[in-house]
Image 1 (tube, one colour):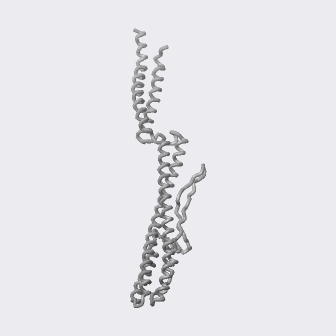
Image 2 (cartoon, one colour):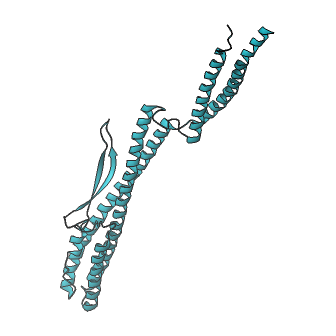
Amino acid sequence: MSSILTNNSAMVALQTLKSINNNLSETQSQISTGKEIGSAKDNASIWAISKVMESDVSGLDAVKDSLATGQSAIAVASAGAELIVETIKEMQQLAISAQSEGADFGQIGTEMAEKKLQLDSIVAGSQFNGVNLLNTDVDGAGAGTTSMTVVGAINRVGNAAPTATTISVDSANLEASVTGVTLTGTADTADAATTYGELTTMLDLAITGAANLGTAAKRLDDQANFVSKLSDSLTSGIGALVDTDMEAASAKLQALQTQQQLGVQALSIANQTPQTILSLFR
């Protein structure tokens, strides 16, 4: 039955065209934003997972900053500890020279004193952002803090809130073994021999402290590399969940554009149908 009031064919063609336009608009949005799932209405479950993962990535960025700060503090302390080792070796040479009869004990004593002041200065100045891993009190707050705490990772188990994992870096405490040591001196050969023994003990402690700092530096370097790779993996995983497959979207866009053109033609044909009723009254 034909009717001039109700055009079923036009309504079907119009609904089809609306559906095509909606799909076309969605596809164009995916291409322009690069995201297949840009909001919760697109896919609530996947969107929620991606947001949790994005939160973890942000947390890992903060972890990388913490590790970088720790690495810098250790690098400064290591440089200071290694310089201390070299300076003590030079002082040992002076102590050996002072064990010879006829040595210029006064000049050697003056050089020894200057180098001891240099050691004290190195220990005091080997700080980064207020943290000195050569001091007994690492942060200088007077609370007796003997280690530096660095956030090394964030862990998430199931639906529980993520927790931070920390790495503790102990002080080399060269303040006690270097700055706090009073040398006998080089007033004569006997004192020089005693001083040489004191310097040998000091050197052993300085080498141990420098080696421990090197071990801690390697650990932080390895952890920083791991966190960087983990962050990249999470970012890639988020992309796999929400990013637009541009090849597929491009093919879909062309198909929808063709469907849109055909839909417009179909609607135009359907709208012309009532005009055929006029031929019944001729």
